[in-house]
Image (cartoon, rainbow, N blue to C red; front, side, top):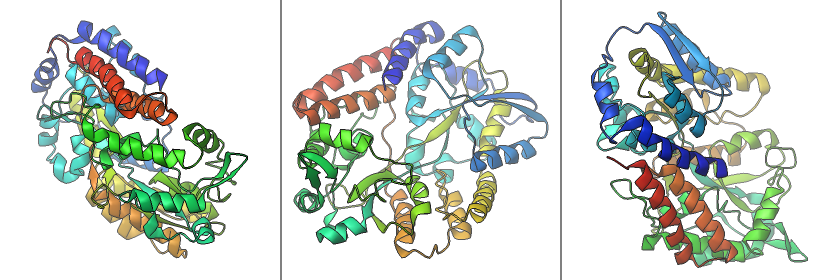
Length: 454
């Protein structure tokens, strides 16, 4: 997290040198590009790290479609400081993959191009091809600035073994009914000498802070992207998190206990019965699938204050930096690698992997509803474990309730400062209101730096 905050500061400082007035340069450059031109030459792509079977299949598909294009792939991880350093030195990639929370920041600083003309040239309607909430992550000033991919919705995984032992039912794990939820937590929580040995519910307070704040009526930024961390509605989610952690020994004890989990191992928190319920993103059931015979799990959606299922969009995206040498071919490559056909190839690859390792196919959450549905229909079959199948189905259901985190030039700072506020409030170092006020001040400084001169 410190690395991310440093990146935000460095980007803000270098943007004055790199860009001029925010909101002009990227648009002007994009207007001069013929995105409908026949793709040719070399495309340099950076940030497509650790490509697994899904990533490799999509890369191979795009390469087959663009026979006249050579893709020079730098598979090292995206780094905010390195990105601005490369642009300042003239070492500009044609495509960069990054977390969607970065995108608007770079759009505001004229470091990337808007892609509406790219989409038009390739007959892509963003709000039809991707979930609108996913597109909203990268929409700024009436333009779409990135090609999104993936959407890993959160839901609540239930450990039915622990719940049955404590006499807790699934309907009690309801984030819209705090009293009921806290009662269930009290039944399942166990400690030894004041130290937790089992959590009734792990809310993943800092890792899922935005979910709790937004889900319970908060707002992270306004329509212009300015931070709103001190909005009155933001306190509800944090206050409930404090109730949940205080009921289980306090945030410090909860955090220390969860840090000890063997999350990816044979003695993970569900095998070891260390949690009764836990917030998890869609990818985590893949980790648990080898242990189906040892665990009994189901899932319920996170619910908003009105009792309705709630989810948030999260994932990565591709951008074209200002100064890219081959933006037309970069556009074609990005569209191909996120097309339904590319995802179909990825589905085939994942199906083959699961046939080989005997694992459960949980589907792929691509960011595109048509691709998600096609992969689900072809590859997600009865696993033989009713609870696990219910988990998979729940994640598919909650995608439809997704909302955006909010598109802001201070997106990374908002995320970092929100986590700082949650930590301070849960530890009792500050009141919730003071923690949010301090977070707002810091995030607003980042916003003002990112939009300076525009």
